[in-house]
Image: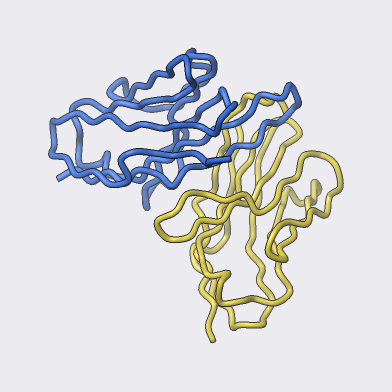
Length: 114
Length: 115
């Protein structure tokens, strides 16, 4: 069975500050990991994904994440927060079988303060 | 290319009623998955259909069912609605490429409110 834990249901940062959203996973097989963003009244948009290639993954809107197997982590970072980054962020895990459903964390709401 | 569309976007029902939600995948995508999103439980997988067959199923009661048509459009049905069924229902489609992972593209969701 797989699971995802996102530390902090709500994170608040100042505009221009570093964004760090934490994600730890549990998986008995090599995982594929994802970060999604959800804006109000919208579906999920894929930010970035780790599928066993490079451990440092760059995504859209300046976000990146690093897969650390020893720490079972896949934290999301952005060097400088922008007001438009305010949204809910979800970390998700699946396996490399191709047909296994995504398992999501509970989400982290990011607020950006001017 | 048009994205995943879901209809209706908003729905209000009363306890005991049944509801049908619709999802049209991206053209060419044959896999459709459904997720339930609630503040308490987060995002939970309901089921996945591929080529009109249910390929995966989550841990939901039998009141939740789905189907897929030959054009890959999918519907999900919830019978005997309960207050706890109030949620955002998200549909996602993916293109079967034969690779180890098929990216899922999400629709905007249907917001169901049960009174």
